[in-house]
Length: 309
Image (cartoon, one colour):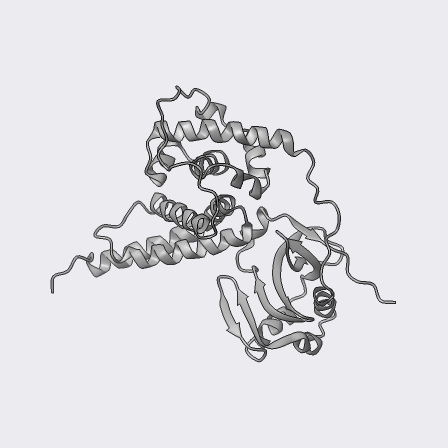
């Protein structure tokens, strides 16, 4: 029977290549999406949306695409959809007027210092217009060539250079004004989060279960979703079988949760678990354990555990 889909072996190979590439590319996709939407948490949502959309659309293509550029194009469009959906400011059209000036500052040899671009707070990128944001992230954070950026965003190389020029100038101004980050004071967290962390460290699983609402929602990102206190039970069994964790109440992008350390003496955060509190009980748990790249750009503010007295 005739059809427009590629032959099955070709499609299977394309899917295999897709999954292989995703395993390597996902950290870069997250770095891109997080900076595009100004949030490492929402950026992971956009990554998942991108991969689901890409896998779904793959079977409808007549020929397998150049996967990396194709995935970044999808990620770019999904990020823009996110920005529109939440009424973010879209101040500049995708295609730029490249005749305004001859851009000599966007040569690869004069890029924004890579360390500065990589370490700049994720939320700062949201102060750029979307096209500028995309080009600066792809070039100065992910080290893509001008041609690769042009292909991924479907704009001309001169347009890429113009966006880089404007975006870099804006980021330099932002960096000069930013000064020292104000994230020095320990954040306030609710008593419920403090109690949850203390019970976790005591491995008091019955105590933790008593804190959950009956219809608690659990998501272990990129692994499983469960609903209900009984269904979530296996999640705690998994932690009970490990010894390399210690929980500290924390906030990430204003959201409550617990920072996961390797031990009580450690200062290195290896994971973040977002918690939603309803009154004095836990209504939602979102654990990022299976996406370890997530913490690379996350500014997690740890709070002290409550003392007993």
